[in-house]
Length: 277
Image (cartoon, rainbow, N blue to C red; front, side, top):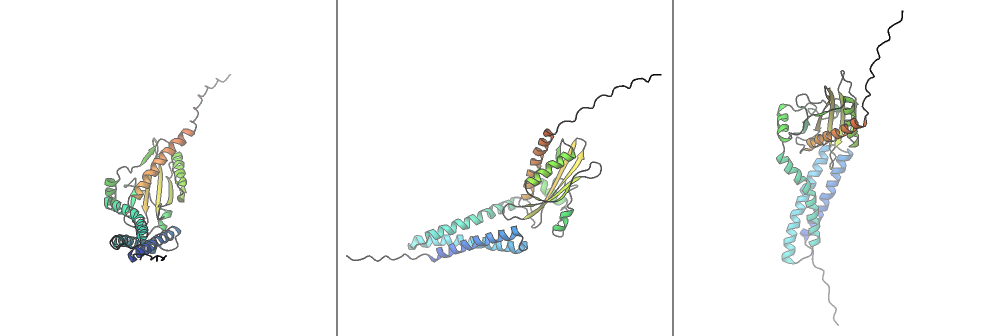
């Protein structure tokens, strides 16, 4: 009985290179994230590495589609390689694609505040920010902010400035932001102020936040400002951060007020007994 010779089907070289490019882009993306989050290098090399990784991911997707055509026409192997390259490339490009759509729809601003007339100022954090990014951008940015984020407004709470300050600080600590300034309010002398550094979820970019607590006749007013350190466009991250911060602070202030016992009413003073002669 004659033996059959098993001949391996040739593998599409496009599929092989598609998978190689996809894995290379994945490794470069992870490396860029590690560089930014750990602070090992300056942010510019990390962004350049990330941009190169995304370009490579797009190239891997193009090669994968080319491999599909070759596999269909010539009947060669490599379908698994092509599918892996397509899946990795699409996964890496999905989030940047979403961010690109937001960049198209939202204004190119990176400094958001609840009070554009008298924005909270960065004091201690000012030395951590790049030159020229400490002061608020001005009326033009405020106008763009009002059109894009009309719900970013000051928060007024029916609580004392100290209770409002404690509510804000509790929310900041719960989010594990790095607190740089922790200055309680002293009504009549100074406003309460909190300066903290927040990190973006994926890349870990550092954004700076300052919160001001000011006494009002009915309680306290809370203003906040969130600004990115780098880039001209924050893709809506700072507005989303402030909105979430103020919503959580309002809930926390309400809980604190409910837990604190109401002050006991003052006892009426008894009239003094007439002195005997």
